[in-house]
Length: 245
Image 1: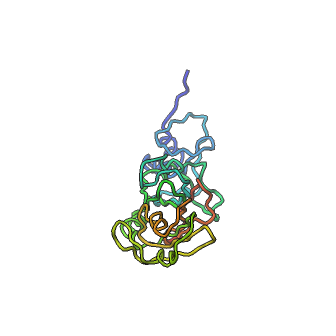
Image 2: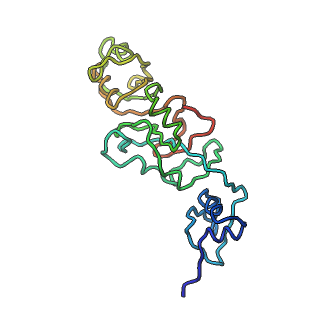
Image 3: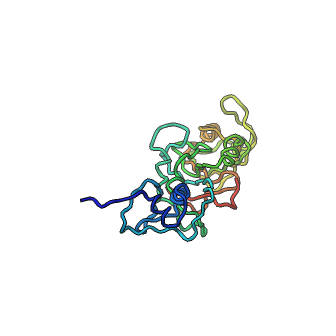
């Protein structure tokens, strides 16, 4: 015979006590645990003997939207084409970087809903991809994205043509249009660093080809003032309150 159960929201409302709608807010905010596990669904059902606890820091303040930084592995799709699995598949609790500068952000399932991809990254490239629920970040990186500098590390093969580095900095065209000046330098004998605004899919590979180089791999390591430093491939973290693009 099944044990009688009640909705978790009803149990919380009686326990606190508070209104049913307030109980649902506590639950949606990830402040309620059942038998030691956080439950975010107000409609979940609990039995009398189950241990329901409201977190001591629980608040009814509206939850702030989050922004997520992902170190996308090469081969995952992030807005340029549909080949390969979606980079969103990397955003699971198990790949969240926990040892993250003392971040106090709690993981909630709702953080993985209603995410906007801000700056697309080619499937064959790896590196920093930003997803956000925050309209201010969307405005900065999408609507005003052409004004935000991106930094890439490109592993190349072949021998650069004479004067090729100067041409990479300024003097090449892409899709029939002259490219704006950018900062391109050698990191070592096979690795170039590009710092540029308004980078289009295929642009960096085209530029390298125009000066006699092939692209072996490409990684985006920075968007604006936010870098990917210390974020392992395939893992993600939350943007901190003090970080600005």
